[in-house]
Structure formats: C-alpha cells, structure tokens
Image 1: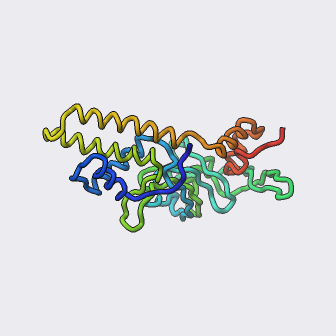
Image 2: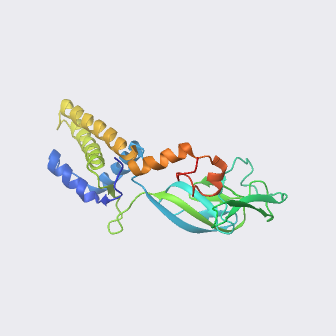
Image 3: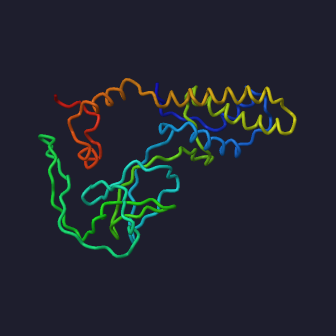
Length: 254
C-alpha cells in the first residue's frame, strides 16, 4: 500500500521494454512524453515531489517555478496568512478599494496550543489575501511582498533532465506497458504487428494502470491513523485552513 517515495530513471523503462517486449526502436525522448501522459492518466499525486519556495511579488504578480505542476498551498511571509483562490471578477484590475481592519488567526500559545486572533490593518481591499493562477504567473491581492509556495513538481533527473518514475513494481509496470502499447500501435499501423497482439498489450497496459493507481491511493496504516483522526476532529474547517492544516490529522481529546 502507498508508494515508497523512491524513484528510478527512464533508462530502467527502456531496458524493460527491450527485455520484456523485444522492441528495438525505443527512443528516450518519446518515452519521456509517454511518461508525462501515463502519470497524468493514473491521476495520483504521490509520484510528484512536494517542494517549498519563497517568491517575490512585484506589481501584484510572481512567476511560477519552471517545474510547477500543481499548487498545494500558499501564504504570505509577513503574517503567515493562507491565501485562497479569488472569486473577484476584477481581481486583475489596478483599482483596489481599501477596507477596514480585519482579524486573522496568526498566533499560537506554545504552552496551550491555543490559536489567537490578531487584528491587522494594512491598506487592503476585500481580496487582499487571495491568488489567481494564470499561465506562468500567480496573481495576488497585494502589490509587493513575498509569498511561501508549497507545490507539486514532476520529478526530474538532474543529470539527464528527463522524468523520473516511482521505483515501485506496480507503478513501473504501468509505465512500461503504456509505452509498449504506444510502440505496438505504431508497429500495427505499419503492418508489423497483428491487431490481436496489440489488443493484448493494450489490455495489459489498462490493468497495470489500474493496479498502479490503487497502489498509490490506498493509504498505509500511518496515513489511516491521520484519516481516522480527521473524522473525529472537533476543529472546524476554517481553523484548519488558516493554520495551514498543522493540527489536521492529529489525535484530539474527546
């Protein structure tokens, strides 16, 4: 259950295709493209690497990292307030209207673990602590400052700049059979492989993708403990959000 967090290189996929299917025309650049496809089709977040980064905001925007895949969370680095997606239809407008003081959960008593509200009154408008993703940029509600971004990145081999694959038998099998099915389809179009053999390889690829998804999504006993605690937690969801989920999944007193 669950993935180990270890990765293997694209060369392992190439060698397995040679060995298991006997295909000789295997190109790493094509395999890299197909790996992007199958990881997205499996649809589990575990294969991605979670990364933190601090970005500088200028003119209400900041450029996203080049390996950015999806956003986990974002907060400002002044008061450590979580930013949420905006519903403001004029979020990108330069006209910002100031509003009154606002209270946020910003401090925790280390002795009791109790969070306190703090009144903050910057020159803000209603969508100050919000963000919007668009293209290669993140737009926020304040003109300058810094934000801390937690995001999922597709794992890349620093030596070859090619994607890495989770080093798990089921996940690796899903990647290998998916790439083999793509090569087999091309051979079938050239009348070098029968349709019956192609259907068999595609069937194996379909089953392997399902097995890999289940392996990635089914939680291990450690994750199950956090899930059980979340169902029993008396805390409300807004407290989880504003504190960055620091207590979510912890065991609470009845």
